[in-house]
Structure formats: structure tokens, C-alpha cells
Length: 287
Image (cartoon, rainbow, N blue to C red):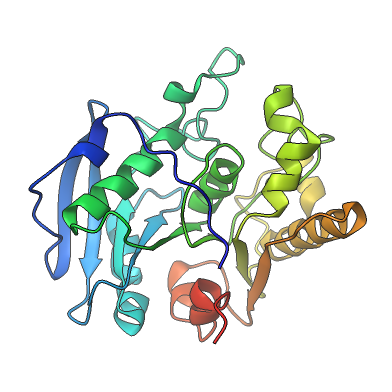
């Protein structure tokens, strides 16, 4: 089972003690991370026995509560705690959410403590502290805009997630320097755009999941992003195949999986309630 090494934050949620566990059913908590309060929308099914949790990153609608509720079905099916951090549009516009705050408003490269990515290991540590399990396994699942956040996060941070699932992103981080950051590794400092960085990216335990009917062109990025494909379905297929071909050509390890939800469009329930959801979440496991 492929895993990544977690870089624990100094201070913050990982240091917390005597926290109450998440209650059964639906709940909402406001938790302060580095002085910034975030809402955590959680669902713990009655059949939860401590097998692990899923951190779900919502889409551009920022409707964290709705994403939590839509995820309740697979949370019950697989007995997993689901937690949806709310990154509201007022404090986290697309530069800070989908693109992680990698670049400042003036176009300069941001330091690690400025990037929105920094909240993720703290959120993970907080959930583990509440459940009194510092080694509790987890998955990271990003949907649409949240998948964009997750895939870009994966190039910048080391996490011990069992699996990263990028579901239905509208644009993707292709393993090339020929596209600028957001769509590729171009324009990033050498440390973050080298062949070694891209090799590491292709070795990640990353699953791409997309619906075959996710072919609506409206509200998708245009310009350079359009070169990735005319709709989400084609973009995600091209993203996976491009990465697979590069890994094969270079002789690099390739840890990605592709899961197609046949007949599903873009609405979250069509993906979350699809028969392939189990494959997307846990199909990497071997009997």
C-alpha cells in the first residue's frame, strides 16, 4: 500500500489534548487553525468502528454542508467518518482555494506559511486527536474545485494519506513545464518544477475519478486550459494518459489509477451514489 510521509505542523491541532470525538450523525465544529477559524462539517455513521476517515474538499459552490450530506451514503456503506472543511469564497477565492495560494496577488511566489495547503495536515491532526488515534488512516477526496486544490496540493506537500482521489476536476496539473502552474509545472521555482519533482508526482497514490457524461462545456476554464480538453471527461482522460505515458517513457514508478463512472454527470450525487464509488475510494487495495 503506497503511503506518503506526513510533515506534522509545529504547534496547532497536532498538539491538542482532551478533545471530544466527533458525535454520531451530522455535526458542525468551528476549529481554529493558526488563528483562523474553519468550519468542519462532519458525518459519523452509526456503524463507524474506527477504520478511518475521509477528508472531503468541496467544489466551487463552497456548499460544505451539502457535500457532507451527499457523502453520507458512502460514509455509511464503508463505515467511514467524513469531514468537509469549509473554505468560504470570501476568505478563500480561487487563487487561495483551487490554486492553493502558491502565488501572491502580485504574482510573486508565496512562502509555505502563506499557502492554503498548510491547513490540510493540521486538519488531519485535529481529526486524529479528536478520535484519540494519532495513526488513524485516512483518504483525501477532492471534488471539482476541491479536486483541483487536492491535485495541486499533492505536488507541494508530503502527507501520509492512504490515497488521494481527484474527482471531476475542471482543469488538472499536467506533468509538464510547458504549461504554467495551475495547468502544469511551468513558472515554478526549480525546486518545485524539476524532473525529480515531476517523478515524485507521478509516483503518488492518486486516483482520478470522472463521469463519462461529464461533458458540459459551460463554466469550464477557457484559454490555455481549453487545450487540456473540451470538457471534464476528456480532460481527465488526457491528464491520466499523459502522466502514464511520461512515466513509461522515463521508466518512473506510476502510482495513479483511473476510475470511470459510466453514465454519471457532474452533480456530486451522481458520482457519490454511483456503483463505482467503492472502486474510486478503495479499489487500490488488493485482497
